[in-house]
Amino acid sequence: YELKDHSAGLTIGKWDYIFSYIKAHAGTSLVLPDREQLTMSQHFLDSFMKLMIDTCHKRGAHAIGGLSQHDTALSELMEEKQREVLLGCDGTWVAHEAVISPVKHLYEKHVKGTHQIDKSRGEIKIGARDLLRPPKGSVTEAGLRKSVRACVQYLVAWLNGEGIV
Image (cartoon, rainbow, N blue to C red):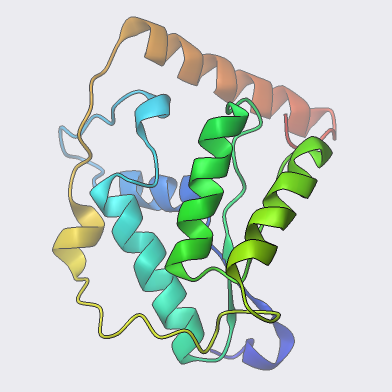
């Protein structure tokens, strides 16, 4: 709240929320499914996104869609971005310049004006149970290897000052 006069809005950081979700379940037997299954259609992530958009708009702030994984297929990325814009996001992040044009076109098609702050979604009822519901999915050795590889790649890129990988 204190930053309200110095901020344009909040981003829907999927991986940031997942990290917080993991911390909230520390000491439990919770194991998340493979990364590919942690899409925004999972109930806990869908609830997070809807609540974030609603919270931002109630306070006159922009809700910014999250940064998509750079290795996501274009069709999956566009599905994710369409979900964001239809739920009320005012803008979004992309990780590669090749997707700027199609994502911009998607937002221009669905957003009338410069934002959707005044777009009412009605009264949403999202509680702690929604935000903490365990995701559905499976855990595989290939998924574990991919997650470990991603962690190592991010760490190496961070240590080399390269940013996102």
